[in-house]
Every structure is written in structure tokens, then in C-alpha cells.
Image 1: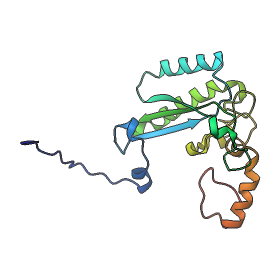
Image 2: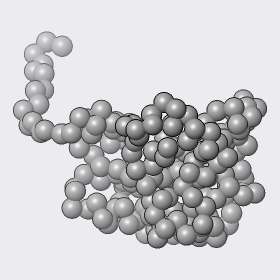
Image 3: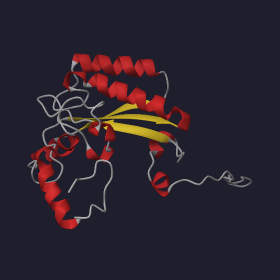
Image 4: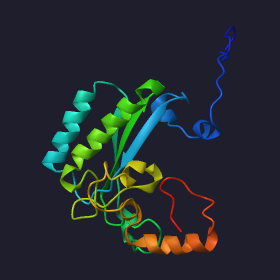
Length: 194
């Protein structure tokens, strides 16, 4: 275009490498300083009436645009694979909800974490605050690693985080970890324990 002047960003910020390479540009408008917390679940059925009420109550009370639930359909060919064939054992679900909160002010971290934790706990109140493998739900999606699942104050179900993510495949993953990473070099809060 004739006469247009390109916008040049002059505000520079130093950010950790991981923060700059992970982001949700579709949700956060490309602002790499956006903070977020995510939780997940697998559902074998739709939401119960109590869960739907918890969703409405919490999202209506939030009163800010940074909270959302993304509902992803799930199943089809994915559900034809035996649950022991890969690390991902969730093979009979129809829905994968993602519970997400976005904000930019670090001073709001505790408040925003608390809101999302309350929402999630309320939706899964009947099963200890998490989507345990049962007739309605089937654990969580590891791509949204959530250290709250290993916290006994947040997960009162008695089902360990490793079962929520990997179900019966966790012992096999531990054997692979002992073989290929016996020193536990590659790890994080919910990394496979040797």
C-alpha cells in the first residue's frame, strides 16, 4: 500500500525461552506475556445436570473474558486402538473438555488459579474433584499437564495422577523410563517416575 507506514514494536521485554515458545495466539491475541492455566478431562458421556449447573454457575460468576471451556469431540478411529497399544490409554471417550483461564497481570495468578481450580473441582465434585476413570469420565489429557492432580488438596479422589493420565499403561512407561533415562534427566512435575 502506498503511503502506509509499517508498525515497529519498540517495547522490548526479556522472557524465559519456554514462555516465548509456548503460547495460545488464537486465544491471547499474540501477546506472549499472557499467562494461563489449563485443565482437561475425557468424557465417556455428556455432562450430567449437576456438572452443567457447576459450569454455568462458575463461568457466569467469573465475570471476565479470560475463562473458557473448549469442547473437543473425541472418538472415531481413535477409539479403535487398543488402550495398551500406545501411552495414551483413553480409547472410549466421546468428548474432551479443556478448562482454560487467561490473564496478563502476574498479581492475578493466585486469583485466576483459584477460579479455575474451583470450577474444575465443582464440575467433578462427585468424584473427588477430578474426572476419575468410571462410567462417565476417563481421566485427563497429558498435553495439559496439571500438577494439581498430584496435590491431595486438589485431588481428593484417591486416584493417583498417573492413573488419570495413563491408566494401566503407567508401569510400562516406568520400565521404558528406567531403560532410556535411568538418571531421570528428562523430567517435570508430572514426569514418568523411574
